[in-house]
View 1 (cartoon, rainbow, N blue to C red):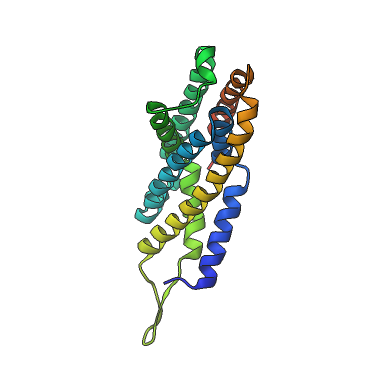
View 2 (cartoon, rainbow, N blue to C red):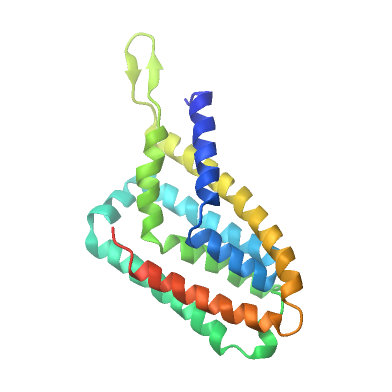
Amino acid sequence: MFETATLLLFVTSAVLLALSPGPDNLFVLTISIARGPLAGVVTTLGLCTGLVVHTGAVALGVAVFIQESALAFSLLKIGGALYLAWLAWQVFRAPAETLGARASGDGYRRLYLRGVLMNIMNPKVSLFFLAFLPQFVSPVLDPALGPVQGSVTLQIVILGLLFMASALLVFGLISLAAGRIGGFLRKGRGGLILNRLSGVVFAGLALKLLLTER
């Protein structure tokens, strides 16, 4: 279904895109420094789960609707921005003694859901997938008929899963590296300062998403 060269180009592109500065890896970086490497990995798993939803949206044509509907795009954008603003508010109003603590149990479940919601409620991800994934869809070669269209849906799903795996690898490494660095920075009042800074980051991401245009 895919040529080896096509897959290599796609995976290389996916890894480079995951490494390039953006809201998702900044979110993971912030969580990892403030809450530890495991918190970053759990957040990464949530973000990658959101990519599954965006892949399905492209495969089923929902992303086209979001692209063509200004109302749908605006509702998702505003919802995502409000959610990030709410996260920032939660950090700013949290008691100082809880800010430096590592997540555990229910806290990890919340981090996972944060990642899922942040990714799903960013319409730019769906539009990016809509523009990016189809570039690597290949026709099926039939000896009698020549090039014919294969299962586009299946190919989109496979490409989406490969992109998710690439993001999981890159973001996972970011989580581990940033978490170890954060371990030194979280000592003393460092944990309080880092978490307050994470609130500023969440607020900045909310503003950036709110100002996003199609």
